Amino acid sequence: MSTTEQERESEFAGLGHIMEILTGDWKARILMTAVEVDLFSRLSGSPATAEKICAMLGFQSSGVHDFLGALVHLGLLEEEAGRYRNSQAAERHLIKGGHAYIGGYVRFCDRQLNPAFDGLTDTLRTGSPANRAATGGSNPYDSLYADADVTETFLDSMDLAATPVALTLSALDWSDYRSVVDVGGARGHLIRLLVSRNPHLEGIVFDLPALEPAFHEYLATTGAREPITYRGGDFFTDPLPEADAMVFGHVLHNWGVDERITILRNAYRSLRPGGSVFIYDHMITEGTPSLNRLLSSLGMRVWSAGGHEYSAEDCHGWLRTAGFSPVTSGLPDLGEDVLVVAHKDG
Ligand SMILES: C[S@@+](CC[C@H](N)C(=O)[O-])C[C@H]1O[C@@H](n2cnc3c(N)ncnc32)[C@H](O)[C@@H]1O
Image (cartoon, rainbow, N blue to C red; front, top):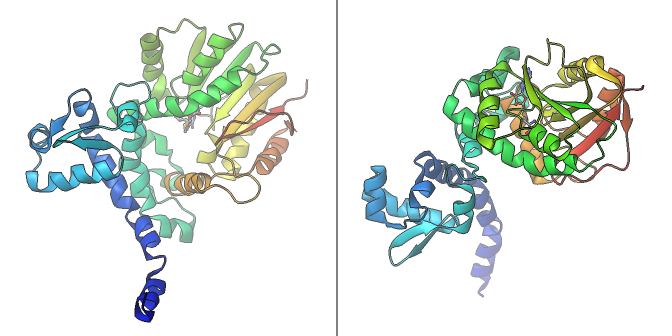
């Protein structure tokens, strides 16, 4: 290599890495567009040529080759003899109605989270969320649930994400408890799995009234027979149902520290003496936090009012303020999530 070539190489070292980061946004946009037009469901079981795909989607043929080629590079499509079919990942996670469909989360990012991320600079300057639906103390879930289509697919994705946690929690010893409330339990996926594996438990979902129809529809479609009920309300202003145990999954990270303490105080009031709270979130662990956790934290900062990820130690402090005694050892590993448990003295 000549000196000039060496100089050029060292001058441009790292440029590819920066371009890779920069175009991440465009790659996500390509995925979101493919999900928006439901390309993967349409190709499932019937691979098609670019011309057929154009006719199917009403696209112009000049751009569609670039679009499909990019999806091949992204590992979402495969091409053979001019026909495009889904990759294994697309077939598993991007087919509408499939049990592992993640399209709801893609659409949530498209409509809500990514537009909020556009305002990250302001959020870092002001500490306020860039998501206008969350400013002035408004609950961003109200605007999310105003769109029925996005709500349904968003709930599908929440269920998918909560399944490994639900299975681990279900395997704990619940023999000391008779009733459990999943606070912010969405349409009841976790509580159904928990009660089906621990049939002596009575399960209650406490969530916003807007999700009650989704809860009943979920029970009907899954054929659930477990004794679970729904209580609609606001965990800031309404008393929580009395119970022996309460679960808060991906709830506290949506709110500022004062609001977290308000929610935990509310839990303390309704929990029976000797009862326990189970909290899980993408908590920031000791050492260098993973990129996923930091992205999740920034996502909460731009989307919700005061939200961000936090450490288990911080959570112990809020629990003590609310009256609880945190448990500090012997808890199971939840993977990306971290579990915190605390008791109300009997
Ligand atoms: C990120 S989701 C968590 C869903 C589920 N627990 C999980 O583990 O993924 C947060 C939940 O909190 C609920 N929520 C938000 N604000 C609420 C409020 N003020 N009162 C009750 N529930 C609320 C939302 O409707 C949503 O179901």
